Image (cartoon, rainbow, N blue to C red; front, side, top):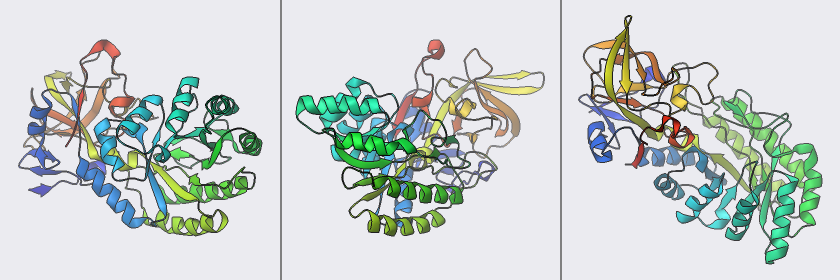
Amino acid sequence: MTSVTFRQHAAHPWFAVDGDQLLIGGRSITDIAAQAGQTPFYVYDRGVMTRKMHELRAALPCEVHVHYAMKANPMPAVVSHMLGLVDGLDVASAGEMRVALDAGAASDLVSFAGPGKTDSELARAAAAGITVNIESEREIRVLAAIGTGTGRRPRVAVRVNPDFELKTSGMKMGGGPKQFGIDAERVPDVLAAIGAAPLEFQGFHIFSGSQNLRAEAIVEAQQKSVALALRLAQHAPSPVRTLNIGGGFGIPYFPDERPLEIAPIATNLRELVTRVARALPGAQLVLELGRYLVGESGAYVCRVIDRKVSRGQVFLVCDGGLHHHLAASGNFGQVLRKNYPVLIGNRVQGGAREIASVVGPLCTPLDLLADRMDLSRAEEGDLVVVLQSGAYGLSASPRAFLNHPPAVELLV
Protein backbone atom coordinates (compact mmCIF):
# COMPACT_ATOMS: atom_id res chain seq x y z
CA MET A 1 0.00 0.00 0.00
CA THR A 2 1.36 3.43 -0.88
CA SER A 3 0.31 6.75 0.57
CA VAL A 4 -1.01 9.38 -1.83
CA THR A 5 -0.44 13.04 -0.99
CA PHE A 6 -2.24 14.64 -3.97
CA ARG A 7 0.34 17.40 -3.78
CA GLN A 8 -0.94 18.90 -7.01
CA HIS A 9 -4.14 19.71 -5.15
CA ALA A 10 -2.54 20.73 -1.83
CA ALA A 11 -4.67 18.17 0.04
CA HIS A 12 -3.60 16.37 3.18
CA PRO A 13 -2.56 12.70 2.81
CA TRP A 14 -5.58 11.37 4.67
CA PHE A 15 -6.33 8.59 2.18
CA ALA A 16 -4.20 5.88 0.56
CA VAL A 17 -4.23 3.67 -2.52
CA ASP A 18 -3.89 -0.05 -2.94
CA GLY A 19 -2.91 -0.93 -6.47
CA ASP A 20 -5.03 1.52 -8.43
CA GLN A 21 -7.88 1.80 -5.92
CA LEU A 22 -8.46 4.79 -3.67
CA LEU A 23 -8.95 3.66 -0.08
CA ILE A 24 -11.23 5.56 2.30
CA GLY A 25 -11.41 4.27 5.83
CA GLY A 26 -9.15 1.46 4.70
CA ARG A 27 -11.69 0.25 2.14
CA SER A 28 -11.55 0.42 -1.64
CA ILE A 29 -13.74 2.90 -3.41
CA THR A 30 -15.38 0.15 -5.46
CA ASP A 31 -16.32 -1.76 -2.27
CA ILE A 32 -17.78 1.40 -0.78
CA ALA A 33 -19.74 2.00 -3.99
CA ALA A 34 -21.14 -1.52 -3.74
CA GLN A 35 -22.20 -0.82 -0.15
CA ALA A 36 -23.82 2.45 -1.16
CA GLY A 37 -25.77 0.54 -3.79
CA GLN A 38 -25.69 3.49 -6.19
CA THR A 39 -23.81 6.45 -7.44
CA PRO A 40 -23.60 9.32 -6.73
CA PHE A 41 -22.78 9.17 -3.03
CA TYR A 42 -20.82 10.95 -0.34
CA VAL A 43 -18.52 8.98 1.92
CA TYR A 44 -17.02 10.33 5.14
CA ASP A 45 -14.13 8.76 7.04
CA ARG A 46 -14.70 8.87 10.80
CA GLY A 47 -11.03 8.07 11.35
CA VAL A 48 -9.98 11.28 9.62
CA MET A 49 -12.36 13.31 11.80
CA THR A 50 -10.96 11.67 14.92
CA ARG A 51 -7.33 12.21 13.90
CA LYS A 52 -7.99 15.83 12.95
CA MET A 53 -9.62 16.52 16.29
CA HIS A 54 -6.89 14.75 18.26
CA GLU A 55 -4.19 16.74 16.46
CA LEU A 56 -6.03 19.96 17.23
CA ARG A 57 -6.45 19.02 20.89
CA ALA A 58 -2.75 18.27 21.16
CA ALA A 59 -1.89 21.74 19.84
CA LEU A 60 -4.43 23.90 21.68
CA PRO A 61 -4.33 24.82 25.36
CA CYS A 62 -6.58 22.47 27.31
CA GLU A 63 -8.68 25.38 28.58
CA VAL A 64 -10.01 26.12 25.09
CA HIS A 65 -13.34 24.47 24.34
CA VAL A 66 -14.07 23.35 20.77
CA HIS A 67 -17.61 23.34 19.39
CA TYR A 68 -18.65 21.69 16.13
CA ALA A 69 -20.61 23.97 13.77
CA MET A 70 -23.17 21.53 12.38
CA LYS A 71 -23.91 23.61 9.29
CA ALA A 72 -20.65 22.27 7.82
CA ASN A 73 -22.07 18.74 7.73
CA PRO A 74 -25.35 17.97 9.54
CA MET A 75 -25.54 14.27 8.58
CA PRO A 76 -26.86 12.61 11.78
CA ALA A 77 -24.16 9.93 11.83
CA VAL A 78 -21.45 12.58 11.47
CA VAL A 79 -22.98 14.67 14.24
CA SER A 80 -23.14 11.65 16.54
CA HIS A 81 -19.49 10.88 15.89
CA MET A 82 -18.37 14.48 16.37
CA LEU A 83 -20.36 14.72 19.60
CA GLY A 84 -17.93 12.26 21.16
CA LEU A 85 -14.95 14.41 20.16
CA VAL A 86 -15.96 18.02 20.85
CA ASP A 87 -17.21 20.06 23.80
CA GLY A 88 -20.42 21.35 22.27
CA LEU A 89 -22.47 21.87 19.11
CA ASP A 90 -23.57 25.01 17.31
CA VAL A 91 -26.75 24.81 15.22
CA ALA A 92 -28.33 27.17 12.70
CA SER A 93 -31.93 25.94 12.47
CA ALA A 94 -34.58 24.04 14.35
CA GLY A 95 -33.85 21.07 12.11
CA GLU A 96 -30.20 21.05 13.14
CA MET A 97 -31.26 21.50 16.76
CA ARG A 98 -33.39 18.36 16.51
CA VAL A 99 -30.47 16.38 15.05
CA ALA A 100 -28.17 17.61 17.83
CA LEU A 101 -30.57 16.69 20.61
CA ASP A 102 -31.46 13.35 19.00
CA ALA A 103 -27.72 12.59 18.92
CA GLY A 104 -27.68 12.96 22.69
CA ALA A 105 -26.16 16.42 23.06
CA ALA A 106 -26.78 18.01 26.45
CA SER A 107 -28.91 21.11 25.96
CA ASP A 108 -26.48 23.33 27.86
CA LEU A 109 -23.78 22.42 25.33
CA VAL A 110 -25.81 23.53 22.28
CA SER A 111 -26.08 27.07 20.93
CA PHE A 112 -28.33 28.38 18.16
CA ALA A 113 -27.20 31.12 15.75
CA GLY A 114 -28.82 32.62 12.66
CA PRO A 115 -30.24 36.00 11.64
CA GLY A 116 -33.79 34.89 10.88
CA LYS A 117 -35.02 32.71 13.73
CA THR A 118 -38.80 32.36 13.70
CA ASP A 119 -40.98 32.67 16.77
CA SER A 120 -41.51 28.92 16.61
CA GLU A 121 -37.78 28.22 16.48
CA LEU A 122 -37.15 30.51 19.43
CA ALA A 123 -39.89 28.81 21.41
CA ARG A 124 -38.46 25.38 20.66
CA ALA A 125 -34.97 26.48 21.61
CA ALA A 126 -36.21 27.95 24.88
CA ALA A 127 -38.15 24.78 25.68
CA ALA A 128 -35.08 22.64 24.98
CA GLY A 129 -32.91 24.82 27.22
CA ILE A 130 -30.27 25.60 24.60
CA THR A 131 -28.50 28.96 24.33
CA VAL A 132 -29.87 31.32 21.70
CA ASN A 133 -27.32 33.67 20.16
CA ILE A 134 -29.35 36.86 20.01
CA GLU A 135 -29.09 38.65 16.65
CA SER A 136 -31.75 41.38 17.02
CA GLU A 137 -33.88 43.25 19.54
CA ARG A 138 -36.89 41.34 18.20
CA GLU A 139 -35.41 38.07 19.43
CA ILE A 140 -35.10 39.58 22.90
CA ARG A 141 -38.78 40.59 22.86
CA VAL A 142 -39.94 37.17 21.68
CA LEU A 143 -37.81 35.25 24.18
CA ALA A 144 -38.80 37.58 27.01
CA ALA A 145 -42.47 36.90 26.26
CA ILE A 146 -41.73 33.17 26.23
CA GLY A 147 -39.97 33.48 29.58
CA THR A 148 -42.87 35.40 31.09
CA GLY A 149 -45.38 32.89 29.76
CA THR A 150 -43.55 29.76 30.84
CA GLY A 151 -41.94 30.94 34.06
CA ARG A 152 -38.54 29.78 32.76
CA ARG A 153 -35.65 32.02 31.81
CA PRO A 154 -34.43 31.30 28.27
CA ARG A 155 -30.65 31.14 27.94
CA VAL A 156 -29.18 33.81 25.67
CA ALA A 157 -25.85 35.09 24.41
CA VAL A 158 -25.30 38.15 22.24
CA ARG A 159 -23.93 37.64 18.78
CA VAL A 160 -21.81 40.69 18.11
CA ASN A 161 -21.17 42.17 14.67
CA PRO A 162 -17.67 43.51 15.35
CA ASP A 163 -16.17 46.66 13.89
CA PHE A 164 -13.45 44.57 12.23
CA GLU A 165 -13.35 41.60 9.85
CA LEU A 166 -11.27 38.46 9.46
CA LYS A 167 -8.84 39.52 6.75
CA THR A 168 -8.41 37.27 3.70
CA SER A 169 -11.29 35.02 4.78
CA GLY A 170 -13.39 33.15 2.23
CA MET A 171 -16.59 34.64 3.63
CA LYS A 172 -16.63 37.71 5.86
CA MET A 173 -19.22 37.38 8.62
CA GLY A 174 -18.43 40.54 10.57
CA GLY A 175 -17.37 44.15 10.11
CA GLY A 176 -19.36 46.79 8.27
CA PRO A 177 -23.10 46.42 7.65
CA LYS A 178 -24.08 42.77 8.12
CA GLN A 179 -27.24 40.74 8.60
CA PHE A 180 -25.42 38.78 11.27
CA GLY A 181 -25.44 39.75 14.92
CA ILE A 182 -25.85 43.13 16.59
CA ASP A 183 -23.51 46.00 15.78
CA ALA A 184 -20.90 46.30 18.53
CA GLU A 185 -21.80 49.91 19.32
CA ARG A 186 -25.42 48.90 20.04
CA VAL A 187 -24.56 45.97 22.29
CA PRO A 188 -24.48 47.91 25.61
CA ASP A 189 -28.13 48.92 25.17
CA VAL A 190 -29.01 45.35 24.19
CA LEU A 191 -27.32 44.04 27.32
CA ALA A 192 -29.38 46.44 29.42
CA ALA A 193 -32.55 45.12 27.77
CA ILE A 194 -31.51 41.54 28.49
CA GLY A 195 -30.87 42.45 32.12
CA ALA A 196 -34.38 43.88 32.42
CA ALA A 197 -36.01 40.81 30.87
CA PRO A 198 -36.64 37.30 32.23
CA LEU A 199 -33.59 35.95 30.39
CA GLU A 200 -30.45 34.15 31.53
CA PHE A 201 -27.38 35.83 30.06
CA GLN A 202 -24.56 33.50 29.03
CA GLY A 203 -22.01 35.56 27.14
CA PHE A 204 -20.89 36.62 23.68
CA HIS A 205 -20.57 35.11 20.23
CA ILE A 206 -18.16 36.90 17.85
CA PHE A 207 -17.75 35.23 14.45
CA SER A 208 -15.85 37.40 11.99
CA GLY A 209 -15.16 35.12 9.01
CA SER A 210 -14.55 31.66 7.60
CA GLN A 211 -12.20 29.56 5.41
CA ASN A 212 -8.97 31.34 6.28
CA LEU A 213 -5.53 29.84 5.71
CA ARG A 214 -3.47 32.68 7.18
CA ALA A 215 -2.59 32.11 10.81
CA GLU A 216 -1.65 35.76 11.34
CA ALA A 217 -5.11 36.90 10.21
CA ILE A 218 -6.82 34.48 12.61
CA VAL A 219 -4.53 35.54 15.46
CA GLU A 220 -5.35 39.20 14.85
CA ALA A 221 -9.10 38.52 14.72
CA GLN A 222 -8.97 36.47 17.94
CA GLN A 223 -7.08 39.20 19.75
CA LYS A 224 -9.57 41.82 18.61
CA SER A 225 -12.51 39.56 19.51
CA VAL A 226 -11.30 39.08 23.06
CA ALA A 227 -10.54 42.78 23.47
CA LEU A 228 -14.02 43.65 22.22
CA ALA A 229 -15.67 41.12 24.52
CA LEU A 230 -13.80 42.44 27.55
CA ARG A 231 -15.01 45.97 26.79
CA LEU A 232 -18.59 44.81 26.31
CA ALA A 233 -18.47 42.66 29.45
CA GLN A 234 -18.39 45.86 31.48
CA HIS A 235 -22.04 46.32 30.49
CA ALA A 236 -23.10 42.68 31.01
CA PRO A 237 -26.09 42.09 33.30
CA SER A 238 -24.35 39.09 34.91
CA PRO A 239 -20.96 37.35 34.74
CA VAL A 240 -19.87 36.12 31.32
CA ARG A 241 -19.94 32.33 31.22
CA THR A 242 -19.07 31.73 27.57
CA LEU A 243 -16.96 33.65 25.10
CA ASN A 244 -17.26 32.15 21.61
CA ILE A 245 -14.65 33.78 19.36
CA GLY A 246 -15.73 31.84 16.27
CA GLY A 247 -13.42 29.88 14.04
CA GLY A 248 -12.38 30.76 10.53
CA PHE A 249 -9.90 27.87 10.27
CA GLY A 250 -9.67 26.89 6.61
CA ILE A 251 -8.57 23.83 4.67
CA PRO A 252 -6.67 23.81 1.36
CA TYR A 253 -8.67 23.12 -1.78
CA PHE A 254 -6.59 24.40 -4.65
CA PRO A 255 -3.03 23.92 -5.97
CA ASP A 256 -1.65 27.21 -4.63
CA GLU A 257 -2.99 26.71 -1.11
CA ARG A 258 -1.14 25.35 1.92
CA PRO A 259 -2.54 23.95 5.17
CA LEU A 260 -3.21 26.35 8.00
CA GLU A 261 -0.42 26.59 10.59
CA ILE A 262 -1.94 25.87 13.99
CA ALA A 263 1.17 26.52 16.13
CA PRO A 264 1.02 30.36 16.08
CA ILE A 265 -2.72 30.25 16.70
CA ALA A 266 -2.19 27.96 19.70
CA THR A 267 0.52 30.25 21.07
CA ASN A 268 -1.82 33.22 20.82
CA LEU A 269 -4.66 31.30 22.45
CA ARG A 270 -2.48 30.50 25.46
CA GLU A 271 -2.06 34.21 26.02
CA LEU A 272 -5.77 34.85 25.50
CA VAL A 273 -6.73 32.10 27.94
CA THR A 274 -4.69 33.82 30.63
CA ARG A 275 -6.20 37.19 29.78
CA VAL A 276 -9.77 35.90 29.83
CA ALA A 277 -9.24 34.00 33.08
CA ARG A 278 -7.96 37.15 34.76
CA ALA A 279 -10.69 39.48 33.44
CA LEU A 280 -13.67 37.08 33.29
CA PRO A 281 -13.20 34.44 36.01
CA GLY A 282 -15.04 31.22 35.19
CA ALA A 283 -15.72 32.09 31.54
CA GLN A 284 -15.16 29.42 28.90
CA LEU A 285 -13.21 30.41 25.79
CA VAL A 286 -14.80 28.64 22.81
CA LEU A 287 -13.69 28.00 19.23
CA GLU A 288 -16.49 27.22 16.78
CA LEU A 289 -15.17 25.05 13.94
CA GLY A 290 -16.91 23.16 11.14
CA ARG A 291 -15.12 22.79 7.84
CA TYR A 292 -11.73 22.44 9.55
CA LEU A 293 -12.91 19.38 11.48
CA VAL A 294 -14.80 17.47 8.78
CA GLY A 295 -13.97 18.95 5.36
CA GLU A 296 -11.01 16.71 4.61
CA SER A 297 -12.79 13.55 5.73
CA GLY A 298 -15.23 13.41 2.83
CA ALA A 299 -15.38 12.53 -0.84
CA TYR A 300 -18.12 12.84 -3.43
CA VAL A 301 -18.28 9.92 -5.85
CA CYS A 302 -20.09 9.73 -9.17
CA ARG A 303 -19.88 7.40 -12.16
CA VAL A 304 -18.87 8.10 -15.74
CA ILE A 305 -21.97 7.56 -17.88
CA ASP A 306 -20.57 8.73 -21.20
CA ARG A 307 -17.24 9.70 -22.66
CA LYS A 308 -17.49 12.42 -25.29
CA VAL A 309 -14.99 14.31 -27.41
CA SER A 310 -16.08 17.70 -28.67
CA ARG A 311 -13.69 19.50 -31.03
CA GLY A 312 -10.74 17.86 -29.39
CA GLN A 313 -11.83 18.31 -25.76
CA VAL A 314 -12.67 15.24 -23.65
CA PHE A 315 -15.80 15.37 -21.51
CA LEU A 316 -16.53 12.73 -18.88
CA VAL A 317 -20.30 12.93 -18.44
CA CYS A 318 -21.27 11.65 -14.98
CA ASP A 319 -24.44 10.85 -13.07
CA GLY A 320 -23.60 13.49 -10.45
CA GLY A 321 -22.99 17.20 -10.57
CA LEU A 322 -23.72 20.58 -9.06
CA HIS A 323 -27.14 19.47 -7.76
CA HIS A 324 -25.22 17.36 -5.23
CA HIS A 325 -21.99 19.33 -4.95
CA LEU A 326 -22.54 23.00 -5.71
CA ALA A 327 -19.22 24.01 -4.15
CA ALA A 328 -17.14 21.82 -6.47
CA SER A 329 -18.85 23.42 -9.47
CA GLY A 330 -17.49 26.78 -8.34
CA ASN A 331 -20.90 28.27 -7.58
CA PHE A 332 -20.68 28.39 -3.79
CA GLY A 333 -18.39 31.18 -2.65
CA GLN A 334 -15.79 31.15 -5.45
CA VAL A 335 -15.16 34.41 -7.30
CA LEU A 336 -12.93 32.78 -9.91
CA ARG A 337 -13.68 29.11 -10.48
CA LYS A 338 -10.93 26.65 -9.50
CA ASN A 339 -10.93 22.87 -9.56
CA TYR A 340 -11.36 20.91 -6.38
CA PRO A 341 -8.96 17.93 -6.11
CA VAL A 342 -10.49 15.31 -8.44
CA LEU A 343 -9.26 11.85 -9.45
CA ILE A 344 -10.50 8.63 -11.02
CA GLY A 345 -11.05 6.54 -7.91
CA ASN A 346 -10.56 3.11 -9.46
CA ARG A 347 -7.64 4.28 -11.63
CA VAL A 348 -5.76 6.54 -9.20
CA GLN A 349 -2.30 5.99 -10.68
CA GLY A 350 -3.63 4.95 -14.04
CA GLY A 351 -1.66 4.14 -17.15
CA ALA A 352 -2.53 6.64 -19.84
CA ARG A 353 -3.39 10.14 -18.74
CA GLU A 354 -5.31 12.91 -20.45
CA ILE A 355 -6.71 16.38 -20.03
CA ALA A 356 -10.43 16.00 -19.43
CA SER A 357 -13.40 17.90 -18.07
CA VAL A 358 -15.86 16.24 -15.69
CA VAL A 359 -19.45 17.34 -16.19
CA GLY A 360 -22.80 16.31 -14.78
CA PRO A 361 -26.18 15.41 -16.31
CA LEU A 362 -27.82 18.80 -15.87
CA CYS A 363 -28.88 21.04 -18.74
CA THR A 364 -26.60 23.91 -17.82
CA PRO A 365 -22.93 24.70 -18.59
CA LEU A 366 -22.51 25.46 -14.88
CA ASP A 367 -22.65 21.71 -14.18
CA LEU A 368 -18.88 21.33 -14.16
CA LEU A 369 -16.95 19.34 -11.53
CA ALA A 370 -13.52 19.54 -13.17
CA ASP A 371 -12.40 21.85 -15.93
CA ARG A 372 -9.64 20.45 -18.17
CA MET A 373 -7.77 18.56 -15.47
CA ASP A 374 -4.90 16.11 -15.80
CA LEU A 375 -6.61 12.78 -14.99
CA SER A 376 -6.11 9.09 -15.57
CA ARG A 377 -7.93 8.11 -18.75
CA ALA A 378 -11.45 7.13 -17.71
CA GLU A 379 -14.05 4.97 -19.42
CA GLU A 380 -17.75 4.42 -18.95
CA GLY A 381 -18.41 2.95 -15.51
CA ASP A 382 -15.31 4.42 -13.83
CA LEU A 383 -15.65 6.35 -10.57
CA VAL A 384 -14.89 10.05 -10.39
CA VAL A 385 -13.96 11.19 -6.87
CA VAL A 386 -14.05 14.79 -5.65
CA LEU A 387 -11.93 15.13 -2.51
CA GLN A 388 -12.12 17.77 0.27
CA SER A 389 -15.89 17.23 0.23
CA GLY A 390 -16.74 16.61 3.87
CA ALA A 391 -18.15 20.11 4.45
CA TYR A 392 -20.76 22.21 2.64
CA GLY A 393 -21.46 19.44 0.17
CA LEU A 394 -24.86 17.78 -0.12
CA SER A 395 -26.68 20.02 2.36
CA ALA A 396 -25.40 23.15 0.58
CA SER A 397 -26.52 22.06 -2.89
CA PRO A 398 -29.73 22.51 -4.93
CA ARG A 399 -30.76 18.86 -4.71
CA ALA A 400 -34.16 19.36 -6.34
CA PHE A 401 -32.79 21.10 -9.42
CA LEU A 402 -34.03 19.19 -12.50
CA ASN A 403 -35.28 16.43 -10.18
CA HIS A 404 -32.43 13.94 -10.66
CA PRO A 405 -32.08 11.12 -8.12
CA PRO A 406 -30.60 12.10 -4.74
CA ALA A 407 -27.14 11.17 -3.55
CA VAL A 408 -26.74 9.00 -0.47
CA GLU A 409 -24.30 9.52 2.41
CA LEU A 410 -22.16 6.97 4.22
CA LEU A 411 -19.90 7.17 7.28
CA VAL A 412 -17.11 4.56 7.25
